Length: 617
Image 1 (cartoon, helix red, strand yellow):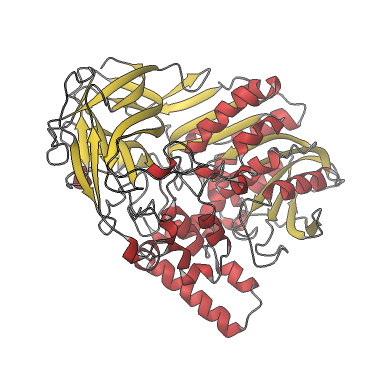
Image 2 (tube, rainbow, N blue to C red):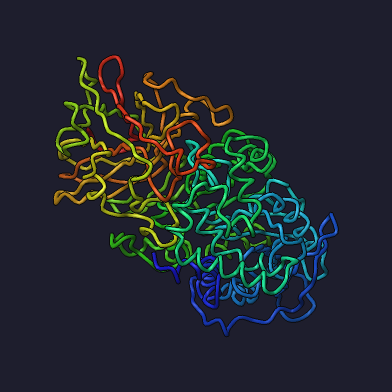
């Protein structure tokens, strides 16, 4: 990944406004403008929260003394650097007041140097919304929106149910629950995403520390070194609980690692668990290769089962072929794979935000909003937009059974996926997982600094490793479409008391190119519960369930559907040392190899259940 692009998107350095802000503005209006077109705020104030902490806030609004529907945007990246540059002026011209605020503990806001993402954003968002609604320049009707972290602040404010909030538009939000930010759905630490983000966003924290100028300079140099050499000095450093450049500046890193189970620390800010508190219309937008797409479907399901009828009727979801870094741009390709005209987020969502808030915050009626389907999603492979009344769109569960002669790790032709369950005992597939030589991350839903780009990437190189099992269908007679989440059931054993199993759903083209579609994984101590981990008896056969995250993809005629199974995906996920110690606390001396086996026979039918919407396997 291009480091400059990564830093700019996150709001680090001079390019922040040009990238983070432009993404916001393009989604609002569909237009691009120079940073010089950004208006000056009508006022800059310190808004007091319920505990007395004051947050730096800029207000943009039309000239004159009228009152206006109000949009709130709360950012950790600096309201001056990453404000919605191209979105403010059109929103103001449309008749909105726009409030842009530094979150607690960041940039011009108060709150000390111990910034901890997520946990104060709900109450602070509530207080900011109610403050804005009470101002003479506001009609009292407030909407909230944002992308990435700002999408997270939107959700966390909404579950507090502020009375003046009328509608929200969270885009590619970076938080839903324990298993969507710090940890993956199977309990694997999202190490690469977290370390990359922390390494590039701690300079402001250093500036706030009560230490000498020389100490600040030393800390900044340490962070710069970590950013420049994050693969060696961050990703590969052990134990993860003792990375000096991070520990000296970011105390919450160790708290995140300490709370490695789904405990009350995470539950108190879980969006799905609090979704019943939301009482406003919702338009949420995500990408099939976004690092945080996993929570979209969980929130959708929670709304359908827990929310009031009005909320259920007025929530909409848009999912497109985007990564975290291509969202808000006119990009129509990922990893060189072209999706065609109309596939970019700018084309698909541009201008919709202002229509959305016009519809819900004013007396106007937007036909575009009134005619929104419940779900609009991009079917990759087919490269067309689809509409549905529910998600997933009534797929047929179709099981494909793993099969081989015991050599799925040695030959791409030995492992197969078949419709029929094996009727006789077969040799298990075996491989050795060595945490000192993990399988490298290749694409996927990751945002990694100085690693392989997120999104679509040819898996052929990693599939050639002896520690990767490969199972494929024959070439398809006709196209097969899937939409939803695949469920992988694996019967496994390991010489280790705790280890990992990871999986990828792959589209194999006729020329042999193997492109990743979706992925998942599980840490075996969490095989039964994310809240109550339990080690395995080495050598015992265990049934594992792995959620392959949602997608919408068509495997074309002549293509093959493939499943890759292994035990690492590094540096996206942390390495399991295989010794039973908590991985984040493992030293180099704790690392040992694990002998892994995957079983597939009548008594132990390993299989993947695909959500097929069209075609026959």
